[in-house]
Image (tube, rainbow, N blue to C red):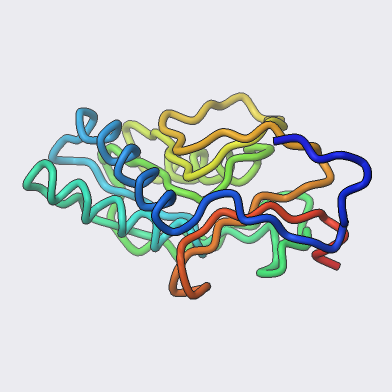
Length: 187
């Protein structure tokens, strides 16, 4: 989606409603299902990746009869208001709450943009003993700066660099949605 120069920079635009996000999660689960093994675990990047990983695990349990373990990894690059806090994501090594040794891990997060967060998470998990790491995102946009790719993506958006994709995910927001916001609206 491309915005014109006359757009209101203080506005937000909902581009996917709750039903649409539910459909994207269903599609992601269907794409992930053939890759499952007994060693697979979903690792959500805190904050919004953790509940998304839980939603995917529930769908996988319904379709395959087996529910992968869900864990969380705490990294911090952006504040809750999407302001940049650190040039590089900071990893809280104490925050990983599942055993990853000799596991196939699928990292789950809301948005893939530069890839910094996912790259650092994957390096950390590999160093911790994971034998295979894949990545799943609800949304992706152009701007990768790291040598990685997303194995599973719900929706891709071609937007200008001064716009931000925000995924609303309970319990942090009232309902599921994907929203575009101009960076000026976040200040």
